[in-house]
Image 1 (cartoon, rainbow, N blue to C red):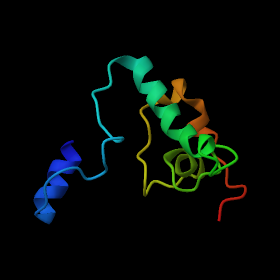
Image 2 (image 1 turned 45 degrees about the vertical axis):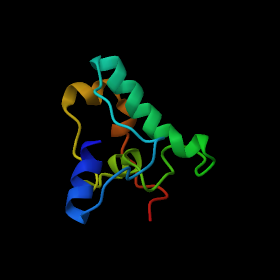
Image 3 (image 1 turned 180 degrees about the horizontal axis):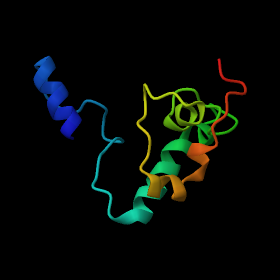
Image 4 (image 1 turned 90 degrees about the vertical axis):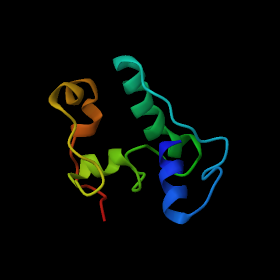
Amino acid sequence: SRFATAFNKVKGLTGHVWGSRFFSRILIGLQDLLQTFRYIDDNPVLAGLAGSNTEWKYGGLFHARAGWRSLVDPLPWWLQVLLPEYWKTTTKNIQ
């Protein structure tokens, strides 16, 4: 809702930007944060757009593994420990 409000203000619009199926909420606790990371990364696979979440070139996991920092910032050390799949850097099959 914060994005929609700012977007609408800049564009001079009102109402929903993305529609009712998109929403934001406050993450409560570390488990919720980790589940949200994985949910976002798994969406392209579940939608049949990629064979694995590391193949989806438009997501943070792909960029993090490639070492590209234009899309995602490095995670803090404690989150790197909890999400090791983000730090198995690979350049194989990256174009």
